[in-house]
Structure formats: structure tokens, C-alpha cells
Image (cartoon, rainbow, N blue to C red; front, top):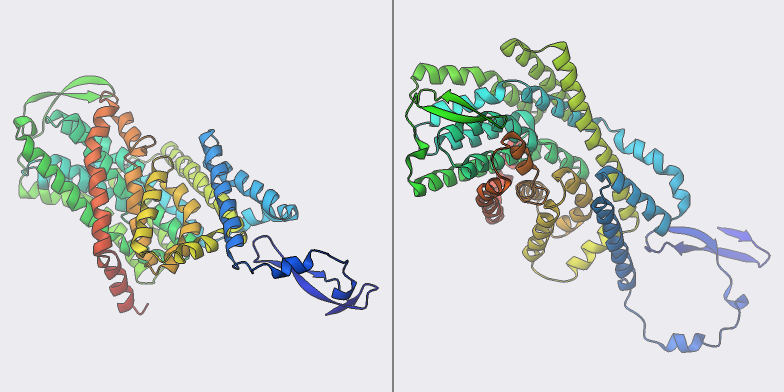
Length: 515
């Protein structure tokens, strides 16, 4: 292309963006018309610089600045969604053309204008419906009937009930709250220590973000464009393995203490905490007939069939994730009405408002994190970070260890949803460059964030259980939860040594279904 500027034909040359990735056109001044530069020869004699490093250093410095601003805003008490949006706004103004702000609102809208995102509010509503019903009590009672003869069986029942309720809910805090209201008074009444009874519920609640349907895995799949169905299947075996590891620790802890506190006789008068007040209650019988056990299983069977049917329709390709979530939410409402017959219009409106509030919070985080992620990608921060790490030529597992430590540090201060949406766009290019399986990383990343749910200073599950059992000191809850943090750390090592525990089932299932 040629254009006349009064200087004869002038060719267009690219004007590089500071990130050296984006170019616009500007006319170049012909060499014979440039002003004389007496230092030009000296500069030509200098050795050529290594290409790429100044740009990489600049982009990484910009990335550090963005992260510091974001953390400072959140530390000041600003809601996470607004902190993400303001950080993206400042990044555009400081490092890009301010004219891009004209498209800021449009991009926020477009980031939410995605049919796949419907899966989030629908699964949240399904979990809200189950959380407001007696399903948690029935799951706990069924587990207790089958495990009551095992030492520590009541605490194991709490963990198993959490695992099953997680498959109905998809939320860690909701799982801990629903099971904790039923299980903690029963365990305290039967002589379980405060730490053991609350620790089992706190740890069991973390399964809510791993066992499908998991909102965390959904967001990871959307952020990385991975199959949500494969992520759900990938979380099944790890969820079962962690459940068994939790139960094994409970058995070991109760066995080492060797106290009669864990087996009080049936019919004994006990005192259970009830909203901070002590009330006399009587223990239920510790012997259950087979007819009673089977009846307890039949009572929870419809819920198990529902979640299996919803996930099977997703895995087999009969429905998209959004369609499967819609069917699951509708059938959950029908089951609660048919089985418990306790749903009123007022209660229904309360459930809708709760689900709407939580969904709105998640969607705002999704929108503004998408904006910030796009700005960082435009500045080439993720790409240059991946380039810098791959050029270090170190073992990729050392990089993974650093990533896991970084995620654990973030988990001490931020909820899993925020971590997924903030960090994944930056880490995913590194993961793919180092040839880690994206499904494996999504599951292991979720397990890592489970540790953050039960460690201070945030430790969401700790405070949820504290609200359920206000008479138990927070210190006892924390002490009872620490062993499970170590167990989750061991499970990450286990899944790293044996990655097939995560990847085998998705590969086998989806290959047998033809992809």
C-alpha cells in the first residue's frame, strides 16, 4: 500500500505495541530524509541485544503490578468481583489505549452472553433445593445404620453423607452446613470429642467442590474450554479415594484413643447442644434390623437415581451441560415435593432468592475475571510467563510444585471460585507448554483448593461449622481439621504419582462412546 504525504511514495511499517504483539500502521520516513544523527554509527557498533528478553521482562513486570493492585483492593475489603473489574479498568488505562474503554461494557456483556453459563445457576438452584430439604438427614441416617458397628462409624457416616450430598449439591459450604446440622449433635451426644466430630464435617464438606456436579470444575471447564463432562468423570475416582482416606483416618484416630466415649449404650440420657442451649435427649437404638437398613437406603435411592441420571445424560451425550442441569433442578424440586411434602410458596421463593443471590455473585466474578484475563492476554503476560518458564529448562515437576504452593497460598485468602477465574488464564498456557493433562490439572487444582477451605485465616468451612456449633471453640475445630489438610496433601502426591486415577475413567468412558 502506498500513500502520498508530499514526500513521494511512503511504505507503511508496523508500529509495535509495548507487548510487541499488536501492530498498527504508520508512515515511515524515507531514510534519505531523516535528520542527521551523529551518534548513529556508535550505536551500530554496539553488540546486538538478545531479542525477546526486554519484552518478556516488561510484560512480567506489568503482570506483577496487576496482581499487587488486585490483592491490595481485596485486602482493603472491596468485593472480589469489583476488585477484578477495577483492576482491569486500571490496566486498560495505564498499559493500553484508553479508547478501549469504549468496549469495556460490551465485553462484560459478551462474557456473560454464553449459553454454557446457564449450568451454574441451575446446579446452584438444585443444591439449594436439596439443602432446604431433609435429604441430608436421610443420607446421614442411612450411613449411620450401615456403619454404626465400626469404631468411629458415626464420624465415617458424616463423611459418607457429605460425599453423597456433594453429588446433589456441588457446594462445599452447603454440604458442610447441611450435614453438620444433623451429624454434629449426634456425634457430640455419643461422646465424640469436639475436634473429631467437627473435623469430620469440615473435611467432608470439601468434597462438595470435587465430586460432580462441581461448580468449581464447571468454571474451570469454561475458563479453559475443556469438556465439563470429562472433568466431572475425572473427579469421581479422586472423590472416592479421598473419602476412603478420610474414613481411614477416623478409624485410626478412634482406635488410638481406645475410649468408651465412642460407644455409649442405647437409651442412655445425654445432653446435646441445641442452638447454644443444652437439651436432654435420649440416644437412638444402636441395633438396626436389615429391614430398617434397606428401608433407609430406599428412602435416599430416588436422590441417587436422580444425580446418576443427570450425569449419565451428560456423559452419554443425550444432553448438554445446561440441559442436564435444567432437568436436574426441575426433578430435584419434584422429588422434594413428592417425598417430603413440605414445600410452600414462601419456602420456594426463599430458595429462589438464595440461589439467585449466589448465582449473581458467581456471574459477576465470571464477567470481570474474563475482562481481566483478556487484558492480561492482550498484554501477553500469560504467554511470556509460559515462555520464561519453559526456557529455564528445569524439570516440569518442580514447576508443578511451585504452582501447587502458589495455589495453596492463594487458598488461604480467597475462595475457590475466585482462584479458578483469576489464576487459570495465567497458568493454563504454562500447563499446556509443560504437557500436563488439562483434565488432571483441573482435578488436582480443585483438591489443592479444598485445603484452603479448612485452613485459616479464611477457611470457609471452619466458620460454617462454627456457626452450626457455637458452643465449640474455633481452636478445637481447627485442631480437628488439620489432619485432613495433611491427607489432602498426600492425595495430591498420590494423584501425581498415579495420574491414571484421574485420567483413566474419562479416557475409557469417552473413548468407548466415540469421543
